[in-house]
Length: 298
Image (cartoon, rainbow, N blue to C red; front, side):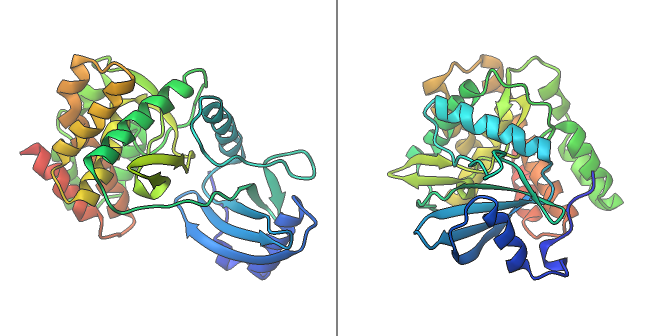
């Protein structure tokens, strides 16, 4: 798959491209366009219109049109089960996924809310409750997308490591293949539910973002991925964080004995996945996750 070119490399001024995208949704004059962030799959902009409407414009880079369409299915499934997530809106053409200048985009309602870097035991448990509700809400959807937590995707990342790095990563992954061969329960997992992908109020998750990482996989990996965020924010022990998230999950859905036994293995695997992703891209956070994997492996 060939990713769309970086927006900054466009010969045409970025503002003009974005305004034409917005015009496919509304003819109301645009007052401001503000970049909200650059994610792994999309560039996101907050848009204010003259009638005080606020929108979230996502220009897709590594997410395909099919992936964007599947994300809309996920949005609707979550809403039908009372899980809040921004809804993509229909363009004036009646479509939800638009095209402009060779780029694909979606426009959603802008949702104001509060993010946090503070962690509590109560919020850690609510990550688990939210994951359990997410897995239940998306049960009937067929997801054929593989993302970062899938072993095939990890294998591709590992192939891009330098030989010296690869040796340690392979060592830290010893035994983790059992996660995928021992019939642990599977689900459509979010794949990246961390503090940066949620809004929070009173130690409860009030909004879920970034559904492009959803894949069908071992559901315990979702618990482990959220636990990495919990541990990093709390400055605490990763296994303790995993147990807190899993305890919250168990409040909503039964957790098997095999899952409890495999939690440490899932935490180690997920820490290695994150470390590989950051190392391949030359980002320093790789060391944080490698440190977590080493600690669990001891």
